[in-house]
Image (cartoon, rainbow, N blue to C red; front, side):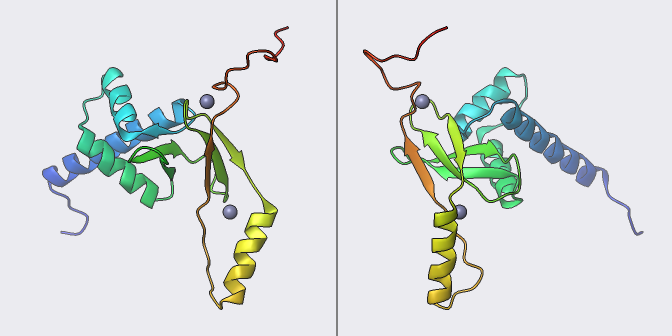
Length: 149
Ligand SMILES: [Zn+2]
Ligand SMILES: [Zn+2]
């Protein structure tokens, strides 16, 4: 019969949907990038019963769907995830200590990438540029600390 779904299918589907929503809302509630492990701990703390493998699988599915931004960690293995605020193309400058992130856009970079593509007769050229460093919150300033009003 068309449109008929067995009970098991419905249960599996709604469980997946709930997990996706839990992951997405946790990411949206906490700005900045997190690892799968940190997110898993956060979800468990919020009383959501979810396994680490499921967190990984959900994060992968969500990033495939274009709902997340994913960056590689430069000094430790693994990836970091954040909810994508817009569908606009942008880059991140991420603090390696606290994972605070700043979105950056650079017309020079975009033009360079497009030009290079043309030059080599490539179409639909995409690029991933990630910048990481230590933010001013994480840099000790012995003498010229920020003035506190
Ligand atoms: Zn920092
Ligand atoms: Zn770009």
